[in-house]
Image 1 (cartoon, helix red, strand yellow):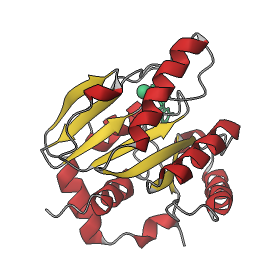
Image 2 (image 1 turned 90 degrees about the vertical axis):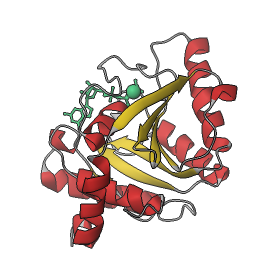
Image 3 (image 1 turned 180 degrees about the vertical axis):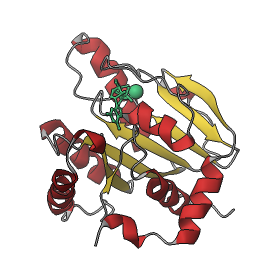
Image 4 (image 1 turned 135 degrees about the vertical axis):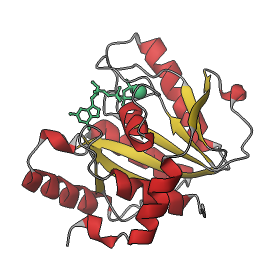
Length: 216
Ligand SMILES: Nc1nc2c(ncn2[C@@H]2O[C@H](COP(=O)(O)OP(=O)(O)OP(=O)(O)O)[C@@H](O)[C@H]2O)c(=O)[nH]1
Ligand SMILES: [Mg+2]
């Protein structure tokens, strides 16, 4: 059974409707004391630089160029908030494992992301993005450890599934599931997505709706 089959039509439709509603960039925070009030449910997108966090947010809301995506790793340096019709916020985090910035700069925005993940009462789920071509690497395991310690519910999402063959995607999904099976805060499903081709987006929208307990 492919993981896409566990979603019922009603949940997929609710996700489709909610994510077609108006979305806007709310603010970018460079400092942890600038975060908006925790008055709406939030889901955050974390992962290595260049894994496709900003692209996935754009694809979910079908708004090319809303979150700034780029081939230059380290593009997103603030915690960026996008608000979806006053119902929920999508949070784009700076990436980790980014070698080209000066060490101090890289550390600064990675610490910011970490601080956000640690102390956000309205954070309903973190999506940890993993490049489908590479699977879990050492820096991702560190991120998983940090997430397990921060007591936030999180889910692994594979990105760029269009770049490899379907059978290879299935194998990375299975391997990743196995690798996270003993992690207590990990949601026991791995979604394969492609921001380019749209794969996995209806399912991810439905999951976000469920995580945030949003009723239409
Ligand atoms: N083929 C393909 N390319 C993708 C996909 N998602 C993202 N990309 C490309 O990957 C590059 C990085 O994407 P971003 O969305 O900027 O990555 P990010 O994780 O936000 O990166 P940082 O902000 O640097 O942490 C861009 O060139 C995107 O076009 C995908 O699903 N398929
Ligand atoms: Mg980005």
